[in-house]
Image (cartoon, rainbow, N blue to C red; front, side):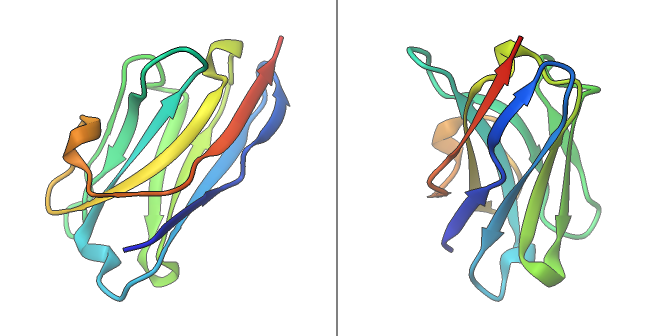
Length: 123
């Protein structure tokens, strides 16, 4: 599976952005997808995840719960991260990652990674 994240940019605090994670492969619906972010000088951290198709389950880090929403469109082989009410502390490079089977919350739990897209939130 090859992943490509896009949609990052510069936004003011309180604004919104939608990131996309486009995947290759016919069986993408069988992969769970996680979103992570890495701010300068910090470790990569879990943002949220969506299960593989079937009974869709999403899970979010406390820091983004209620503001961020993950969805997937398997017909387009794409997973989205809708980010609302953005804060300066959301500034980071955002990565999507995929794994076969259930979602995980750890970086080590994913086998495939996109290249990252930069989100900058100004105050």
